Image (spheres, rainbow, N blue to C red):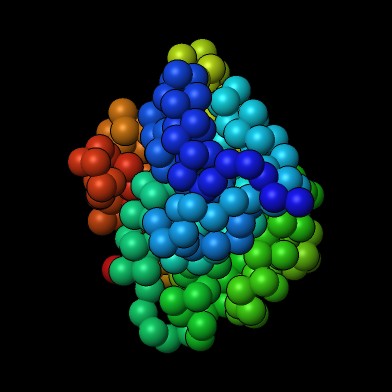
Length: 290
């Protein structure tokens, strides 16, 4: 059975509703949801505006639209988000990969050579960072760690879906699963990268936008958002190879404090890179003899 409405009519009605609900990108939201229902590319909407949906497709789209109208992130509705040109499955148990984090991947890739080495991603979530690095450097071995079982399992599914086999995922808090896995704690990494929780618990952004639906444990940290950064920077010292690099994504106002912490712990060549919007976002340093 066909729906009575064409693609063009459905899009127009959805855009009006989304705009009234406060969506910052009503046209894009409507198009993404409809393409997901149709399992077609965006070009299909322009090429076949007169096409009608089946009754079942119309029902599915209406359900998706209803969820978006109350603010649920598009990525959670469709169950996917592209990161580093890799289509990743996402779920409410993980953060939604964001474009700014691609800057962290860029800096990380610039810090390792082509020589095979071990790389560690702490707080891996969907596996986005670990998978992007593993995809670019198939000769390296990448390990991703997350405290949530659901995140670890989702990252493994993404690796399997993308056929990336030079990565493994462990469940636990920061370095603990590595220490449990290796009784002598002998694994050393040429690079450790992390996008840890770094938001203050009373930050007003936590009650607006997509963030409202994301896991607070992956967003909020004590010490004004600084506690996990401190733990990682301190414990990384015994897990880095000589002259290994540690890189963080952090809040745009935290760069100075992250640099000061790393310098006080003995890291050298400490510096900060900006994200695509010009905000301080990635800080890194090297540990060991020069």
